[in-house]
Length: 451
Ligand SMILES: *Cc1c(COP(=O)(O)O)cnc(C)c1O
Image 1 (cartoon, rainbow, N blue to C red):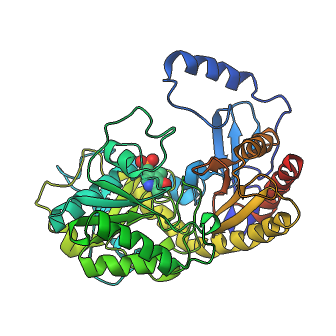
Image 2 (cartoon, rainbow, N blue to C red):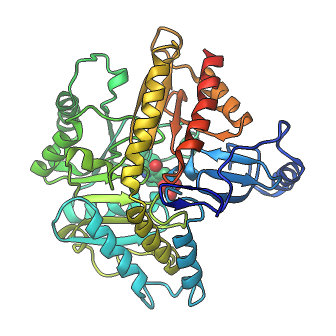
């Protein structure tokens, strides 16, 4: 235990320290081995290989320490080696690694379902099913919605990201790299305009008006009574951390209810304290019919879930939902422990504190440099959208250069956005202020250099 901040203790020193000429010899050797055996279609953002990770630090095989502002894409919110998660995994794995819940069930699955039914919005009767990945959760949410409504059409939005399986590719908006040449895609998916305040033609348009725009299109192009589900990320992730205008989500959800459409909130990225609430829909009091969860759920172990109205989930015939590995017992133990840590460390409060700290700095910087078009987000799901000086033209080159400079200085930072011009900040929620401020110093210097 080397340092502490906010009752969180760390095993690794929370300090950035990278050799000027990284990747070091061990990472270079691994890259060579990798090239010979790993498919080229799998790309990595950084050229070094992980050896250890804790709190806000990822240490590579050559001893470099990077500040982690990606959390493995919003996964390791409680840290990559949270003691409670590590302990629970060790305990579980010593008893059994797998029995298959569909064959010989076990308590951990039920314990996770109890937690999710408790934590997800709404006090209605709920049911939960566990899977392995976010895409699988989305697929199953749509399966349930179609069966329960007897309808086919599914509505998704511009800039949406829902995964890489066939149906979720169809739901995803961005062609490159997710869809190009991977078709044909699942049918009966319809795409509607999102509320994207920074890029609205009419900057005055309200959330309710943007919802009306989408609803009118749905009614004209599909017909409300044909729609099984509307699926939406309450804050869009890969699409650019787009926060819809206030009122957009409630208006959509209300209309869906009126038409008997299942409203699915895809909280795979925004869930589990990331935005300063257990779920991003809580910011506007929206209660989804089904909610999909994955990334932050189990402290890094692969687990995903859908939780929703009991009448919808229980409509499915026995055996209609499942999968060999879904709700793996070790992953379930990790999830119960991770949720415990979120409560113990009060990570919702931590996320709101990160928002305050980061947004304040970024807004000041925005007033000083011309290439920051927009600064947005909630909690520790924050983004900077870069534009060509004085315009709204996306500036993907500057974005890439800034991310590359940050990495060179030892800060792992992710980009996103339909136009590739957004830097997203997704630190582990357990990161200390000192380390976070150091990372922001690096980011600020890189932005000033690019401007
Ligand atoms: C990452 C993500 C998915 C897909 O999750 P995988 O675990 O990669 O399959 C789905 N929806 C959203 C919003 C995501 O961010």
